[in-house]
Length: 279
Ligand SMILES: *[C@@H]1O[C@H](CO)[C@@H](O)[C@H](O)[C@H]1NC(C)=O
Ligand SMILES: *[C@@H]1O[C@H](CO)[C@@H](O)[C@H](O)[C@H]1NC(C)=O
Ligand SMILES: *[C@@H]1O[C@H](CO)[C@@H](O)[C@H](O)[C@H]1NC(C)=O
Ligand SMILES: *[C@@H]1O[C@H](CO)[C@@H](O)[C@H](O)[C@H]1NC(C)=O
Ligand SMILES: *[C@@H]1O[C@H](CO)[C@@H](O)[C@H](O)[C@H]1NC(C)=O
Ligand SMILES: *[C@@H]1O[C@H](CO)[C@@H](O)[C@H](O)[C@H]1NC(C)=O
Ligand SMILES: *[C@@H]1O[C@H](CO)[C@@H](O)[C@H](O)[C@H]1NC(C)=O
Image 1 (spheres, rainbow, N blue to C red):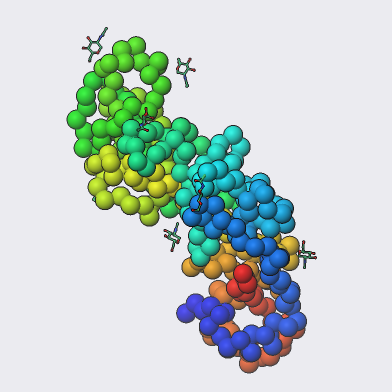
Image 2: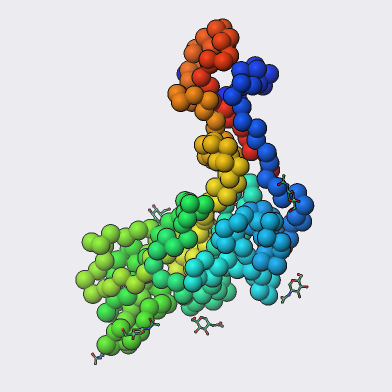
């Protein structure tokens, strides 16, 4: 039976760990006031660019801009709109600045999924692909939903014959109809408000809702500098310290744990520690 260290009485764990525990300190941001832009609350690891540098994580990804109450995240040459920052599950939701939730003809300005935002601190999480295709003449395919034209019209010799479609989910090359060309694929949150994947207004609402990124790694620097292994489990950041290179404590069986306590050879015990990072 697999066990979790957190399920054991703290006092026992502490006794066992004393000999190998690396002291963990919380993030140093207590001197920073939380700021806001529009309805987005901005806390560590994010900061507004007007806030002191040490109020956010050092990577420029976490430096946000505020323009007319719209929070902007600049990354490389792109500027995304910040729709939400969730500190409970370490996610941020961004949307393409071309998408206007009030205007169903508006188009994303950034084309294709280039994973341009992923860094060692940032991962894409739980998104679905939305594919845009342009076809010469109308196409009847249940996967294709009629859409406003979003491509580059000068690439078509006869623009009046172009029909544009959008499709939820990744479509296979074989799903591309003969008279159609792939325009772009962009990401949208799998937690988004899609009611009907065959209605363009519903797909557009989902696009405007945005896509999700996971940023918990920015909270890991202290763990990592103490040679811990940082991970996220059930929305909690864990820092595991391996006192000896062996099976992590959390992956040991309950029986072997009992044996460890019984032997009480603390110095020789091979254990790992799971600490919930303090916020
Ligand atoms: C936390 O930040 C403050 C302000 O920058 C600094 O004076 C202090 O030394 C820092 N504390 C730690 C433990 O790094
Ligand atoms: C931003 O929001 C605040 C508070 O809701 C409001 O007073 C202000 O006029 C807004 N500014 C702009 C440029 O919309
Ligand atoms: C993160 O939590 C918020 C609030 O509970 C929720 O709305 C959002 O969908 C979650 N995001 C992900 C990617 O799970
Ligand atoms: C809606 O978006 C389209 C395409 O970007 C644009 O041409 C049109 O002016 C927009 N309409 C409004 C009311 O903003
Ligand atoms: C549109 O396509 C034309 C011809 O291929 C190209 O010259 C032009 O730069 C493209 N425009 C945009 C905005 O990509
Ligand atoms: C352009 O497409 C329209 C609509 O499909 C068609 O009526 C027209 O004849 C086409 N023009 C040319 C020059 O092919
Ligand atoms: C559209 O939604 C239906 C019902 O929820 C689902 O069965 C189907 O797989 C979805 N299609 C795509 C392309 O996501």
